[in-house]
Structure formats: structure tokens, C-alpha cells
Image (tube, rainbow, N blue to C red; front, side, top):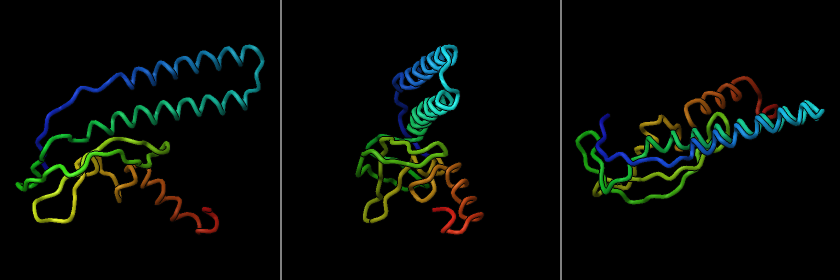
Length: 146
């Protein structure tokens, strides 16, 4: 599958996420040195890593998007019909990104290059999250999983 499009520059979201994570690490070390309970420090540190990972993965996922008036997929031209945010579930939680939808003339089915290129499953799951969900479903009864 080949797609043609222009590449856009990305903002410093990753730098900001890493800076915020670095600050959280320093704060948690100081709290531990001051005698804070490890359970709370561990919980807050985990949350800081998850938040940073979600921001970084969101920024990386955006790189799979195409924002142009049209794309060509398998020698067929598709016109951009919508550009909006979509929430995807990743292995570390939800990621919200802006993406484009395209439709060929006289067709009702739209395509999302971001989803095609990134391997998004059922317009919702990242590949890793889909594997995790499949594992849980295969190992637990619906009652146990709830």
C-alpha cells in the first residue's frame, strides 16, 4: 500500500511530556527522601509514566495521519471528507488524535489512512491493545472480566 501526501512539522508535545515526567521523577524522589509512603509514591509515579506514554504515543500516532485534499490508494483517488479528533485505545489507555477520513467518488465507505497505516483494529484498538484485549477475553469468562 502506498499513499502520497505532504509531511507536516510536529510541535514540542514530546519534549513537554518528557519534561513533565522528569519533574515528576524528581518530585517523587524528594517525597521518598522526606519519608512519604512508598505505595503512594509508586502509584503516582506510575500515573506520571502512563500520562507521558499516552502523550508520546498520541504524537507518534499522529505521524501516520495524512491531511491533504486527496490521497491515492491502490490507484484510486479518495477525497478528504472529514477531519476531526478520534479516541483510540492503546496498551496504556486512551489516546485522542486528529485524523482525516477520505472517500472515493460514488462510494459510501470512507477510509482512514492513519488507521490503515498504523494497523488500528476495528477503528478503535491499537495493535498492542487489541492483543491484550484478545488475551483477556480468551483467558477469562465475561463474568470474571467485568
